[in-house]
Amino acid sequence: MTQCELILFYLHEHESITTYEAYTKLFITRLPSRIYDLKQKGYKFEERWSTKKNKYGRRCQFKEYRLVRKEED
Figure (spheres, rainbow, N blue to C red):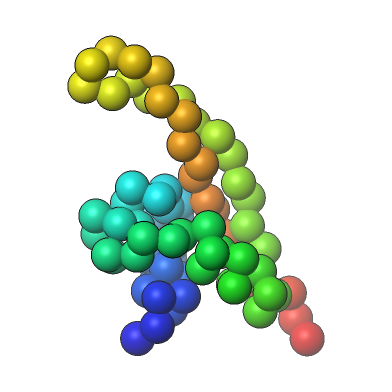
């Protein structure tokens, strides 16, 4: 299974994915690059910035990707 296929499978089960989730659960280190590849294949994504505090209490921002749909050829 390719990294793009893994991401699509994960999105169908969990609705969204972050870089951290891609790395810790799928061992994919370059999620934005794979999202780009999927966009080139016709997939549409909603991207939004989220903020959470880390274990030291500092605010950290990260991008969350949600699959919207695939364009038909």
